[in-house]
Length: 511
Ligand SMILES: Cc1ncc(COP(=O)(O)O)c(C=O)c1O
Image 1 (cartoon, rainbow, N blue to C red):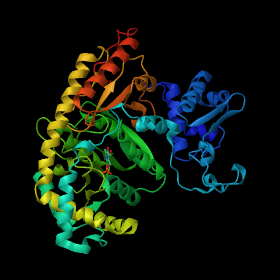
Image 2 (cartoon, rainbow, N blue to C red; image 1 turned 120 degrees about the vertical axis):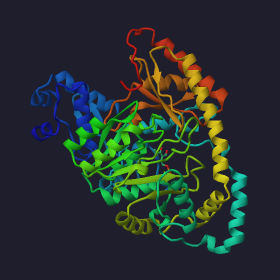
Image 3 (cartoon, protein in one colour; image 1 turned 180 degrees about the vertical axis):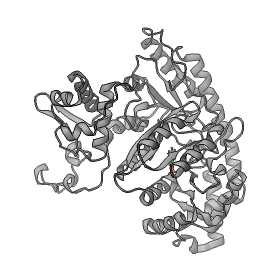
Image 4 (tube, rainbow, N blue to C red; image 1 turned 45 degrees about the vertical axis):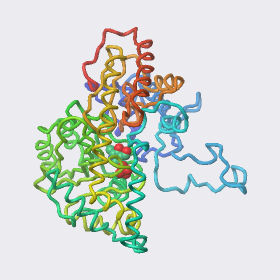
């Protein structure tokens, strides 16, 4: 109990309720591997006494953890940290035709050294709607497959074979195809980022870029800063590699700099991961006024910045947001990008721009990870861009996605009860909605699914727990009429639920 209490500092002045603080603290200890699967938590009475808080607060904290699937609580038995692994035994699946009975099977969960948190079943629940036909899906932050330019691509691939023959099917250089890197350097120049093609590394989607960066910059147990709410498959990846993930709150203008300053004072972060343009999940852009102060802050704390520009070119209204990298005079920003959202994800191609010393190491590591990204795909993409087809495709999709975004904003304005608020992005893929005070996102999800509407509940995007008062709505994958129908359903469900607490009207989706 004593060692545990040292790791659970309770701040009685904090606006975060004490049970939440205890739950978050314990959850971090579990995520960081300090409390291992099967470990028994101390009895609530003993822990409450040691922490100097009411027992009820500890009981509530255990309830929160159990609900989120981090622990199993058995009446009279105590509370135990849950296994992180979905083993065949637990899911009831038989692994092979020859499987012995469960007690004879090899005990994989005792030998797997990595830690892939299953987030307590949260993701399984969130994905349950994935295979339902006929549902209206506001889940996901991905482009609409109906718009993928398959015919154009087919012609381009034919041309690649005519030009390069069987060489197009060989291994490529680890850093990526020169012509594709040139295309990217040109595109970046147009966005105010002056880099040579040699500074660009081709990767299998920005997700691989993140993975490589993580492996070079962070060792197990070190801290990384992420936005909260933020990109879930980013912080889940960091956590799986043993990083301690610290969420820094967002507000209407993007990442909160005072809160980042606080986090830096408390802890030496190895990097800040940020999505400044049309952030996933909120759709918010970092206010341009914050860019210089952010860079200055990061410089004071020797904090590298990973800028993820995953959908920053999907602008439907007004100017494209300026890249943080375009302000970077000290080579402190690593820029990540992707073709997944502006084009399609299936070729698995993204890129990163990194300062020379880091780039050399990244190139080696990329070579070791998979020798090179697929050469055929790189040739095809380079040619696709050189022909001006990417810009034409972007023009077409921006118009369609812009119509869908406007349809969703109009429908929200029409259908939502007054205590609901939401962000109004002018680009990207998703927006962020705050529910009425008495409505829980998981609860709403169950009721919405019964009506054939799916969305992503807020807790998925909060690395430190919480978020039940929010939902993420993806607006690019459904046609306008489905958007209108789906938002009407959500509006009706919320109106029916929220009659009780009309008084409290939060003024923004964040506070
Ligand atoms: C913020 C963000 N970054 C990166 C990615 C990964 O994209 P990819 O690996 O396909 O480039 C995603 C995917 O949804 C994302 O939302």
